[in-house]
Image 1 (cartoon, one colour):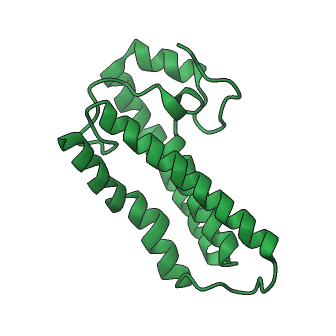
Image 2: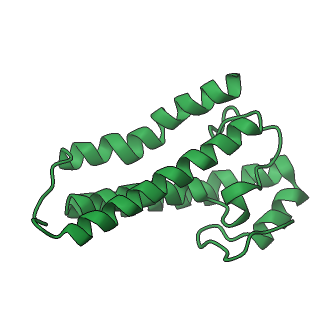
Length: 161
């Protein structure tokens, strides 16, 4: 129960702020400029929905592994199932997708710039903290996973390591 509670709290604190609150602060979630371009609106909603589904799935995997995505309450075991069989960073990609979907939906260059800055910060965090910490914590298991599953561009077939 603690893992689920911590995971839900972290969901609202991290992705909720990064992919929800900040884009709302930039756009007010008011559509701009697209008018009758319903295909653009449809595409934006598909991108947002796909990001939300992947994000919720990835968060649930952490709770099922008796931990949270928060670095202060990690899982007991390395999470390498579900979406993590295709890409090492599905949560970050999902958040990026949600932000870009909003940039498209609200025709906001400000949100596009915010998305790019956010991804630069995330990549620096992953390279500077997360990957070294996972290597230290899980050793050869993480290194094998890292060799076989790309960090940012999903595999076509799931890794079965």
